[in-house]
Amino acid sequence: MTSTVNKVIKVIDNIINYITYAHNHLLSVIIFYFLKQKPFHVHLPSPTNGYHPAVLITGTSSGIGLDTTLTLVKQGYKVFAAVRKEEDAKKLYAIFKELINPKQGNLIPIVMDVTNKQEIQSACTFIRNNLRRETPLIGLINNAALSINLPIEVASEDAFIDSFNTNYFGLVNVTKKFLPLLREGHGRVINIGSIDSWNAPPTMGINSSTKAAIRTMTKIWRMETRTMGIHFSLIEPCAISTKRSERKTNDFRNFKSFSSTSPYYYDEDNDNNISPNTLFNYSNLYKSVGENFGKFEISMPTEIVTDAITHALTSPYPMDTYYVGLDSKMIAALSWILGDRLIEAIESKIFCNV
Ligand SMILES: NC(=O)c1ccc[n+]([C@@H]2O[C@H](COP(=O)([O-])OP(=O)(O)OC[C@H]3O[C@@H](n4cnc5c(N)ncnc54)[C@H](OP(=O)(O)O)[C@@H]3O)[C@@H](O)[C@H]2O)c1
Ligand SMILES: *[C@@H]1O[C@H](CO)[C@@H](O)[C@H](O)[C@H]1NC(C)=O
Ligand SMILES: *[C@@H]1O[C@H](CO)[C@@H](O)[C@H](O)[C@H]1NC(C)=O
Ligand SMILES: *[C@@H]1O[C@H](CO)[C@@H](O)[C@H](O)[C@H]1NC(C)=O
Image 1 (cartoon, rainbow, N blue to C red):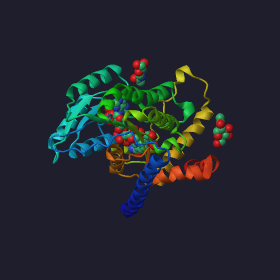
Image 2 (cartoon, rainbow, N blue to C red; image 1 turned 90 degrees about the vertical axis):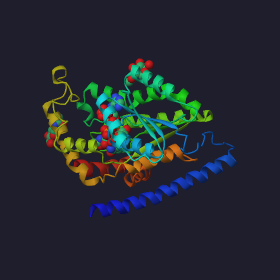
Image 3 (spheres, rainbow, N blue to C red; image 1 turned 30 degrees about the vertical axis):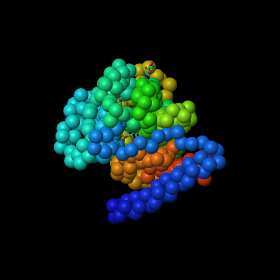
Image 4 (spheres, helix red, strand yellow; image 1 turned 120 degrees about the vertical axis):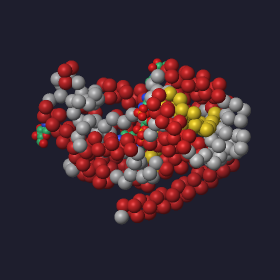
């Protein structure tokens, strides 16, 4: 039953994708004729025998990052796949060894925590030394992210700092470091945001605000580098079923992160500001969001995000923003049509029963 529903949703979603791609294409032509603005980004050839353009992807130990890595390798790209842990680098290499690799792509795992400046520097030096004329750096995919779900008042300072360091400052630092190489390769930057940046249920505030910051930053950075042959795209997926997101949702339902055992829960010893009554009310809110979350969200497979990333990387007319998945498109459209007042009233009904 759900699989049929998912299939139908996927078909409708795909049809809308084609319409928006065509619309984007047409708009590019109109802008070219009427505003005399030529597209400065460069459309590079696909990988061929002897030409294996390079791409760097962050956060490739699992989920969307891993799926995109393997897909691009199979298409013949040389993928520098960044992970945080040495053991994940080994695991990636083992997966690559087993992979059917018709177009002779390559996978080179590298250890790079996006919040570690030294590791970013070493990765940059390593990649620079590994690029050749037939393997220019044509893409940076900023995918690594940390997601913490807690009501804003009870989230510790570390919850905010770690989220913004990973999702926002890490992304900025990595991008700055690799822009010179991307300029040489006429590359593209693809930032993975989230539809949560437009509308998300209560308790997802920290998570969502990092993604909102990424959205605004991507727009401005795109304009600033317009004439440099670089293009910035933003990918805003709906709920995607990755192993980790399932685990996360389970934590939520079983009420795990809302407890003093979570490092991101507020620090009782240093803060007596929150009354037990308030905490009690937040825990009820957290519980009800957890219970209702699963009912209303249809998780889509990672490949729909990978498809959007591939389009952003290879299309002659990459989109500025990709709303990936039908939920994502609906949330984006409805927030605009209905406005905050109505959307929030509906969300409160659905998620908090109030
Ligand atoms: N799944 C969804 O429903 C969904 C929806 C919208 C947007 N997104 C976005 O899609 C992207 C991928 O999400 P996913 O679902 O595939 O999640 P995931 O499986 O949790 O992957 C996140 C990746 O980021 C890595 N990471 C975390 N902190 C890092 C750091 N400081 N430095 C380097 N890497 C770090 C993780 O590495 P470790 O293994 O070392 O922790 C992991 O490889 C994220 O940007 C997420 O916000 C996902
Ligand atoms: C980003 O780079 C700045 C400047 O080099 C540094 O001070 C900061 O700690 C870095 N942030 C993260 C999250 O790595
Ligand atoms: C937190 O946000 C990230 C990206 O915005 C998303 O991957 C994750 O699913 C969110 N967490 C939950 C439980 O929605
Ligand atoms: C918590 O909720 C109860 C009713 O559910 C209410 O009586 C009480 O005033 C609330 N406490 C706080 C601190 O908001």
